[in-house]
Image (cartoon, rainbow, N blue to C red; front, side):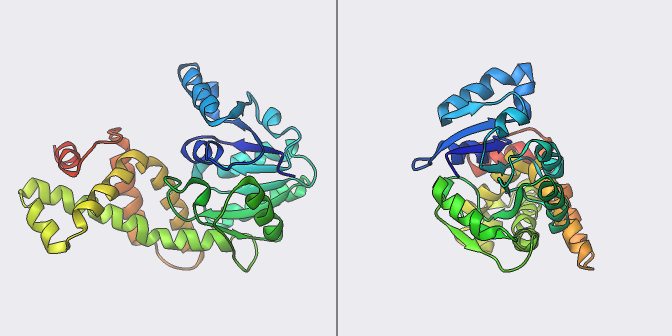
Length: 280
């Protein structure tokens, strides 16, 4: 079943999984970036480095695949399922690892299941680096047990079944992100203000001994992945609204994540250098 794995979307997460030691089976991937002539050569080089076969279309990637991993941005998760549905092999597992609301996953499940595939809700519960195939995954839905077996055969090692239908794993991920990404946004607000006031060392000391490291990490996540994380927080807001909770803090978090990501600064080494760039 896992001899041929297809990926829709092969960015940081896909490359981390495909290129990890211990990964089993062949991997064919389609990524929208291969459609961009300016990005194509670099993308294909990344594929070669991870042992991934490049597909120029979704149909080519999915041909004969028993397992499909969807690893796109949050705003493209449903589109990916709609694109895959007419091309998926009967009975193939469609593992949706995207950070989206339970309602979005249920909509994608309806599309895949109607087409004859087996949709599975998978939540990625930590950054893919450095753990790669060891990253914690939550799995839910009607085909969750089969998906756990398939993921284990690929090489994933930290898998947990979540009781409930499609959307149960996503609920855990989305609600947890209120705090995880909210703290990142608060860190940015706090540290930029401290830098402009000239009291960074004093604020960090008041927060606690590990906060210099935490602040550096939190800012890095936002500067490198802010746009992607903002899209996820939009899905978190939809999750909360579906539960009757007004997402006031979550909307603000999405705004702050989007602002930092839009700066295009990428990775900047060191907290002082980050704050110099952000406080300018």
